[in-house]
Image (cartoon, rainbow, N blue to C red; front, side):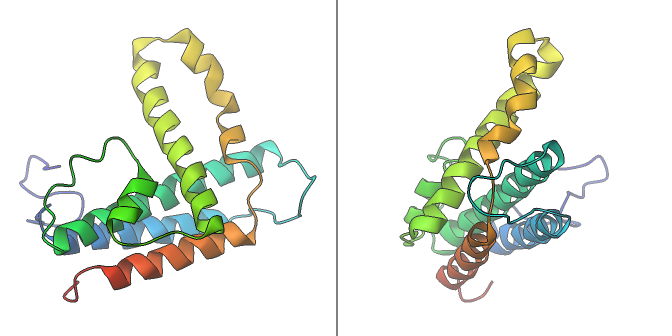
Length: 173
């Protein structure tokens, strides 16, 4: 997305067709997800319900982690010469990761499923809010429930997928 001065969000003159553009964005988003994780996501095991603040942090972590993985997968696909990344609609992380030649494990699948849900609902809410969609605005406080209780395995799944996507990307990242 270009600004009035010709620059974009990731740097002066960045090219969205360049895999490095997507990798840089992915690295920034992952660092942000790591900060959300470090800000206090509790790992207190099964049967415990997250507090409202923990739900918000869980949702922020999944939102940022999902975008980071999506950006990295886009760069990976562009780097392999697959310019057709537009045919994967709306935050379909599992499809993108599989198109990069990666078969996610069970914990990674769980992370991707949760991140997809948060990304898809967040985009719907962002559109509905200015339009005054009362039903969707009423649903917004419950969006934290999409994340559920996250554990250390979710953070490990993010780290693992990120490393695997980087390895699957072009050698010249």
